[in-house]
Structure formats: C-alpha cells, structure tokens
Length: 259
Ligand code: CAA
Image (cartoon, rainbow, N blue to C red):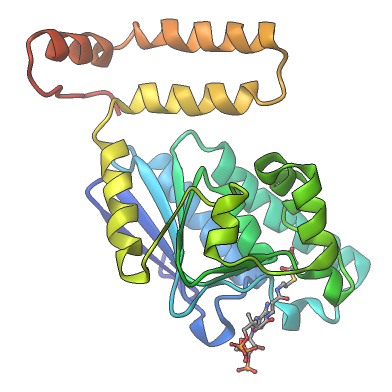
C-alpha cells in the first residue's frame, strides 16, 4: 500500500512511521489514523520487524486530532472517530513488539495520546505536550483519561486535562511523561540507538516481558507473580535462552535466532 499521510520505512529490524501532514502540523484525520493502523498491521505480521518508532514530519509530532474534520460531527460520527482512534492506539499498545515515540515538537491532544500509546517516549528539547481538548469544548478522545493517569498519576493528569496547559520538555520529564529529553538534532540518533539496542536482544524474551508488564498492571500481586513465572518458564522453551546463557558462560556475544 502506498501512503498519503504517513511515511513508512524499515531498516535493520526497526520500522519508522512518520506522520506526514506537516502543513496541518500532522493533525490526525480519519485517513491518517487508517494509514497508521495499516502500517501497524504490517509490522505485526512481518517477522523481520522487531521495533516500531513513531515521529512527525516538520516542527510537530502530532498537534492533535483534526479539528477541521471534527467540527461538524454529529455525536454518532464523533463516537466512530473516537472508536477508530482507540482501535489504532490500542493496537499499538497491545502489540507485543515494543514502540518508541520520538517526539519532535507539538504533541497535543491526540498527539500526546499517540505518544502515550507507545512504550517509551523520547522528547526533543523543543516539545510542547498537553491535552487542550476542554478549550475546544470536548474531552480527550483517544485515551488520555486512562493512559495519562497511568503514566503521570491522577492528580497531574487531572491538572493537565482540566487546565489544557502545555508542558515543555523539562516539565514533561519531571512528571515522568517522557523517558528522556535530548537536543533536537540528537532525537533520531538517540531513538534509533535505543531501538537497535532492543533489536539486538532476544526478541521472544523482550515480547514476553512486554506482555507480562501489560497484563500485570492491574493484576493483584498473586496474579502478577503467576504471569511472570509463566513468562519466565516459557523462555526456557526456546533456543535463545540456551544461546544467551551459553554465550555469557563462553564470554562471547549471543547470536539470537527466535523472531
Ligand atoms: N487540527 C487541524 N488543523 C490543525 C491542528 C489540528 N489539531 N493543529 C494545527 N492545525 C493547522 C492549523 O489550522 C494551520 O492550518 P492553516 O495553515 O491552514 O491555517 C496549520 O496547522 C498551522 O497551525 P498554526 O498556524 O496554528 O501554527 P502555530 O505555530 O501558530 O500554532 C499550535 C501551533 C499551538 C499547535 C496550534 O496549531 C494549535 O493550537 N493547534 C491545535 C492544538 C489542539 O487543540 N489539539 C487538540 C485537538 S482535539 C483532540 O486531539 C481530541 C482527541 O483527543 C482525539
């Protein structure tokens, strides 16, 4: 499939999805969401892709859902639009392959929510992040009332959603909304280096780790122990565990095979 609103590139097991509507600051319209969904499905079914990275073209990561498209929605159309956003972002967060958001500029509304759907967020020092929806007469629609609370806690999430105020990079780092802040020209090198570090590890172990974390977030301790015990045991059913441990004992680099 050729894409109109995103760029989709793959190199060394890492897929890079660049939202590419710079004139609209990469605002997410329905077609852009569908293109992202298609790209994520391709990543899910391609064994040679281990890690996915999201970024934006130009000065914005994503400046939110497309206000021009939403303005005339009926309640039913708004429900379908929000459902589409949730469907796409849930697919990103639930896919066992890890995701990194390389946040290059505005990450507002649906843009902040796209970053929140990723496992890791790396921000340039130029970012502005926030949930301005209440200033438009709406609630967040693509997951912030859940994921923002999970990431920064209820009090900070409420403050951000109720005031609509934007955070700069240092403020976002301070509340744990992003993992790290780097200079703009370091954003993609640092992101790709992290992606390559992940890609060099045993992929099944990495995916089981992600699944265990996701499934344990709201589990009680006993259930979480059970999930981790099972994930740990399952690793011993594939050859990468033998290879990883042999390589350590033989003082050489491991050569992982399981995709
Ligand atoms: N939807 C549609 N178009 C958008 C947009 C959006 N979210 N954000 C920016 N644009 C468009 C502008 O309309 C403008 O288009 P024209 O050149 O055709 O006029 C173009 O992008 C450039 O924008 P600005 O001229 O406004 O650029 P700026 O540098 O002066 O300001 C900004 C940048 C502060 C990010 C400002 O564009 C802005 O406030 N954007 C809207 C941010 C927002 O409210 N996002 C939340 C949307 S609602 C949502 O996301 C709901 C949800 O949870 C799903």
